[in-house]
Length: 479
Image (spheres, rainbow, N blue to C red):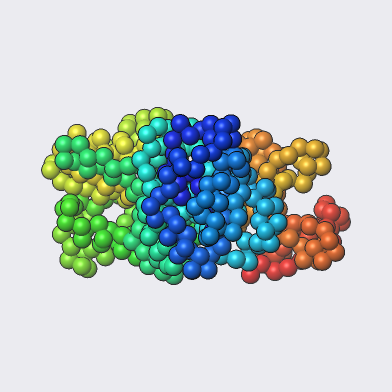
């Protein structure tokens, strides 16, 4: 377990301590407040079989005295990573310690987006902690910036050490509910992409049920499921699996007596949406669940798009543009009465919350009370891989490859993203799979995904010079 220091083990998210953290003045450990249960937590993690390593972006002159004073018994090492989330340096340090995270269960635990992006770059599960209330916002670390830290896309979220222990003991049951369902487990967990607002007794709440990753991430993210859900040839099975996850979460919401929910609805599909009735079909499956339970929740469509709309929310470049687009084109149906009603809205993707903001505003104008906006997938921040583009490297350019997913096929690939797709790269791409033959000869060469022109079957190929590559010609089937 790679665990952050400040704000995670020690209650030191304070700018007054910055000179010590930067190594500019000697560290006075008597001024360092550790969280009351930090030591017992490390002891319990050790008992569960975890080797605990402190990874901090503070100076060694600050980190080492604190670890030696308070945590030496349970931490096998400490590592000062000034440029966290540098995965290259982290992997090199772990190698020096004789640790191979590809063969061990590994978690990264911390209170900042820096910790989460480190874990995502290492492709291991992450836990974002929330043990304190920041007094100031620290721009680089994201201290006090709730939205930025949440959007970094942690696997888990914990407000106490006991919650982390529960995660370590029951990792699948603590996943976001859609991610858990696709991992053959059951969870009712959601996440707040934004803090709840209660004004004049009216709740505004945003929730997400899975992560849509850009770039590297742990194995639990549901990005492939998002793209399959959005394809014309999507399987009925994926809709039913998502239905079960959504229903389990909403059953929990309805069981909470704090609020009585009256209407369950969704952001409808435009006439041009492909697949047709994309959200409507899933909504109907969920609505059937509540009808079979004889729930008092009214399930029906209350919004409609203008017939003349010819674009989409996702094509709008900024949050303000998205708000304007939704404001002008998505309206409450004239025959719907939401006065004094509490409404649950289901949508497919959450980016900035622009759609939610506009729909909540429209509902409140018509007299609605509390609103719960539930999105299936949260588009989290991009994290580049720790792989350099070989083509750019040959030209002495250090460009990191990004993990991408083919929207049509769902296949993953690494890309040195071209400027026309928002990158600065050369366009090189590969599958991310190493050729076993070349590797046995001491050469690391990545294979390409190819298609058999006769059978249509896809396979991995270490492309030979005959076909424009530099490989040995070895091929492997794709399982």
